[in-house]
Length: 217
Ligand code: DX5
Ligand code: ZN
Image 1 (cartoon, helix red, strand yellow):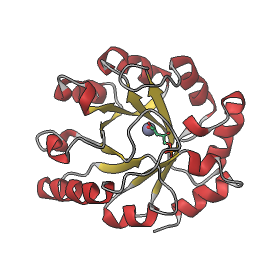
Image 2: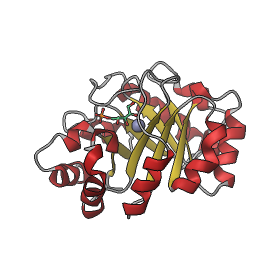
Image 3: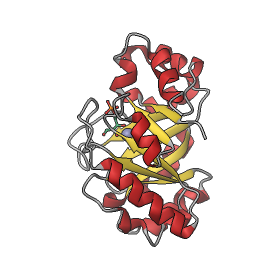
Image 4: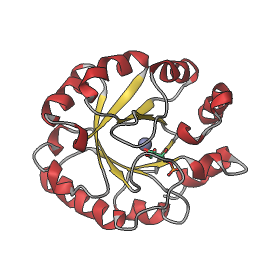
């Protein structure tokens, strides 16, 4: 299967969001990655529901919403209503992950779980069958434009092994510091979806950059 690409609007020009979303619509991207940060789970605040609604009004691609927030259960329905197609919560932010995953599914969204760089993939062993998506953070979440953590390559392989053992069909997403320097190796290691923020939006030709990522394999 070809690489699935999810440009992260965190690196977009927020004052020209409609134009930036249109660029993604016109590109070969598969999803629009939307980063929600609450200043508590991560040391940064990004955007909230009104911005997600505004993005959804312009988007023709599904919104891949990454919740970097504490107590995500309180907001799942609101993000669904705002236009989320995928809802990804952090394992580290959920006391009752199984309950949260089922709540996401009952809303009709694809359920994703993200793991911080220090969290082992084995922590998903008992829930992997329920997941539509696993997001491996390849930076410590909170900011765009950070350096890719190389240990992610091994982690993708470990995750694939765990998934294969249980016949899981979840998509494997990599988030943080993705560029042409690591994209091919990530796909070889077993990734499905590459999130890319600064690599796409700081390039001269964002649409062309998305195309390059899309055509790695
Ligand atoms: C980081 C966010 C990422 C971020 C990726 O906390 O979850 O989605 O936007 O940005 P880059 O590609 O610049 O590392
Ligand atoms: Zn993200």
